[in-house]
Image (cartoon, rainbow, N blue to C red; front, side, top):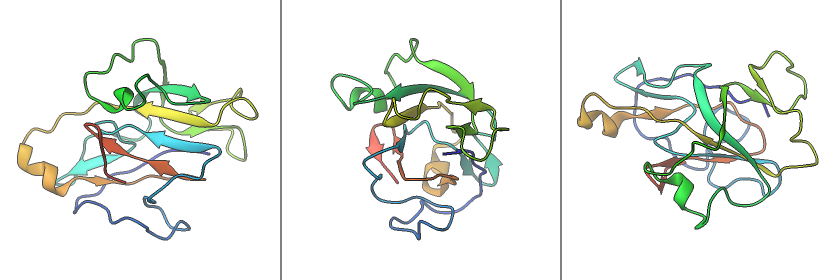
Length: 151
C-alpha cells in the first residue's frame, strides 16, 4: 500500500479510471482501503504548480472504523486532527517497498483503513477548476475536498 503522488495541471479527474493505471477509483475496496481527506489530497496541482509535493508531511490515522463521530467530521477543514500521527507521504504497510518514508508496521491484521489529511492553499480561487489529484495506490481510495467526495 505504498502511497505517493505527483501533480500535474488539468481538469478534475474522471471517476472509474482503470485501476491498473495511476488515478482515482469511485469506491474503495472494503478491506485495507486508503481513504484520503480532501483539502487534503495526496498530490494536488493547479497551473502546473505543486500544492502538495511528494514526501510532504501528512496527518494520518490508522482505523478500524470511521475516523470521527459523526463519520463525516474528519473530512471537513475545521476538524481538529491534533491527536493524529504525522508522517511523510509515501505510506507503506511493509510489502515490497521498505524504503517508503512512513512504514505502517502495525497495520497488517490490525487496521482496515488509513485516513490521511493534508491542508493546502490556493493562491487564486479560479485554480479550483483545474486541480488535479494524482495518486499511486493499492486496493482503493476515496478523496474529499472540503467534505465533498471528488474521487
